[in-house]
Image (cartoon, rainbow, N blue to C red; front, side):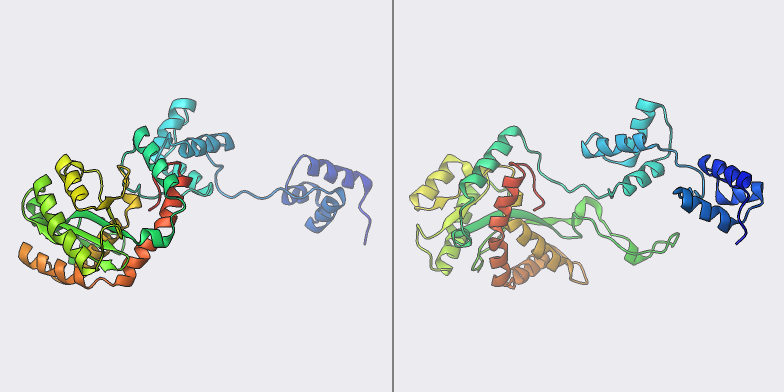
Length: 338
């Protein structure tokens, strides 16, 4: 191998230290790229990576600012991030630039789940409830009869529905979620369940008030107790803190029938497994190919699907209670993923 002249080598080393690329040094000195690479290795200086495309508009400082703002809840989307940078640094970039920067930080956009608004008082009571029942076993929770009311729409659901389309494709019938004026009607349902299975359910024809609620307790709830051959003291009844549930007459009725009531914290649907039972029921109803022709047909479907719910599914819901309690404790009384 022919030795490199000392002046040429010195010049190559100088250009290397000036951070010139191998290609540029070869063009200026006439040396081969392999020779320049060998000198680089000997000097312990790696070649600078070649950057393709234009440089990023956001500096590390800018990215760090919007990342911290996102984690602190000061911004919740890319548009707000763009406005924040424009306000604090005068930098104007597109929302897509902000979005890509947050994606590089490992963050992804998600639809915000709907959760109850928790006041400090709600949080305190939820945390107290979780601490009080932290040592309850699954067998303890299996003693509870869970109850609630829900609305079931005649036509469609209140939730999101998704479909797959090609970009720019025209709307086809399967791509839309049909709606009708005023929702097409609905029915209100009261139901209860326990680990052994579902209890009796009833359609609420009139406005639910304290008197009607006590009739439901006297009929459907008591029939459920008799069906599962339970005696006072063998079960605990759960309902939320709706005024008709906590009315003096309702409280007295429960006391007269020696029914122990679970002390329930307000704004806590995530703690009540019946919410997942409602979701399961509505999924079953949504699986019908044709919508019901009226509320009466909807009620027939509700009854059929309610009675078909597998007791094992009910048991799994109740078995989730220790995890729900642990989630509230971890959130220090705040909202959970449940």
